[in-house]
Image (tube, rainbow over all chains, first blue to last red; front, top):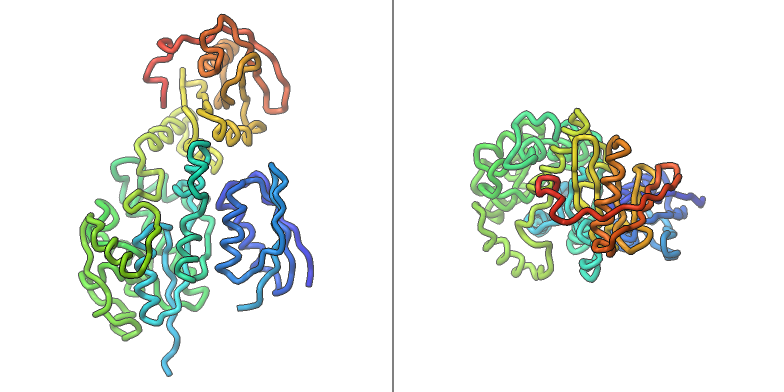
Length: 77
Length: 347
């Protein structure tokens, strides 16, 4: 298990989702990815994307102008 | 036991592609969705920029549809590749800057590549014969199948019975009898089908999912190309065309004026890429300045900024003009009277 970070600040939806998706492709089940983004739309979209693709959102921290979303990569396939 | 067949469905977030995917799921096929982000997509967030629309749920419609269907969704960034589709469409444009036929061909081609890379068997779309004047006609549907390279692995479940049988039908992977024969622009049968499937909430049918079919948007895009002297764009350019009032007093510069708080906040995100202005002595909009203005132009930009501020009837308004690197200077200006902004400055 390893921990990774993705800076998706200043990107507008759906780009933060696309970057998250592309990053997770290279990770292993159980790995943790912390995504930092600034588009408030990501608060709904990244968890929705995780739900349909079998990943788990562990934590969402809303810092006002920034969001921190922690994802645990789900099992394959 | 027969092999589990797999289909990749083009999911726009609208009703038709949702129904097409659902029809194929009903036949025991494993379906996953694919959605392409071109930069011109209209979805929940675009409307949510404006504060008055904040109450509406903010969602990406394609993700929402995938969740309703219980399928995976792969969102593909095609912003760079899409430029060639928009700038050089082999089949030309529709009523506005919409290259619908080339666009559909491009998306099916990308889906076909994805299908091959991921070991899927065929592609499905929500296309309906006669629904769109350019891309969804009986004579253009074979063009999409051919030019995309998908050929008979492209199945349109909503109107399949009106078209020659495709490979999945001939091979018996799907039962042609359980596919449909919808045609034309009416939405009645789709809405009825939605009711049968218990789908109550969906993005407004026929609302269009692309800004390029929008007249104002297309005009702004052409104006951008004319002003820059070249037909090219970056993602930021096309995002900004969706927001605010666009005012071009002359060929040297254009202003993008936030209409309310939500738009002002959105435009604030571009402060490092553009010179920006805002009234300091009164509340008012954030204004981005795009182009190469002279000293006089900057004064005019400040007067227009003042015109859209709460100080529009004041004698003088202080307007801050901020460079990309944050250097600020202040101009004391008289707000431009409303009648001094000719209609044709509005892009």
